[in-house]
Image (cartoon, rainbow, N blue to C red):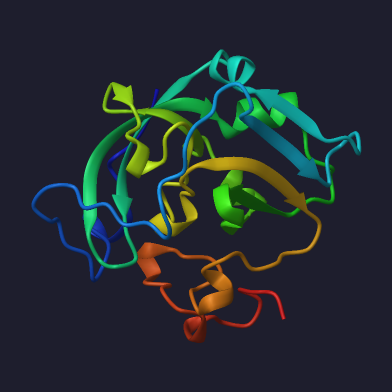
Length: 206
């Protein structure tokens, strides 16, 4: 189990500008998709080490080894939910089964309806990056990303893509859905990297 619920940064677990709300708010773009296990597939594509695309049916994906990550969750809208217990398939496990090419430096996470979010390979490869199937001991609720949600807990939560369906390894960085609409390319909550106008040289594609 990876426990990232404690952070040494800033001497507190709450990033600047964040607050802990009552309850657990849910925010997402668009409607909640239907889950059809007979046709659901998870793809790994792009700059793979073999040049091939990998496909995982729901039975195969749901039977992959699982790990647990305890981590705080920081939404760019400024609320934080502390100490979530996520359980699912680690990015490391997925990279063993479908390895990236050496030149792949970024990843695009793709979800239902064409939604996407880009992250650096160094963020994707961290021990606490997870494709979660459970939250706090139960299957993830549909509005929170069922059946599978990407979890990248050290970044703002729009990078933790709900209803994730694919990983694309990228040789060159490109912006995802919200990044194209003015959100920061990296999204570090400890540096309050909320919007693209805050980007320093080299923090985003041209």
